[in-house]
Image 1 (tube, rainbow, N blue to C red):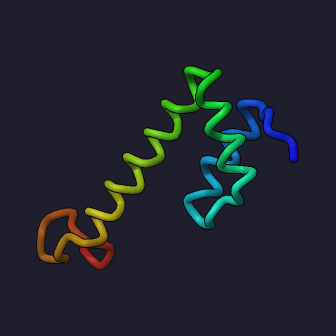
Image 2: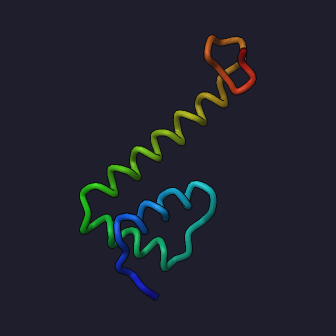
Length: 72
């Protein structure tokens, strides 16, 4: 189990956790990386913000301007 990750590997894990649950080793490696890196936690927060924004957009009724995936 390799706990030290590069920023490129950490970014891949941040993106991957949007689609699947990370293993315990990957979660631990990501947390350790966040302690040593200033940039990757910012990227992770940006990804979380985008996920939340898309969730709000999907939940918006289609009759609201710009709302919902079925809006035209």
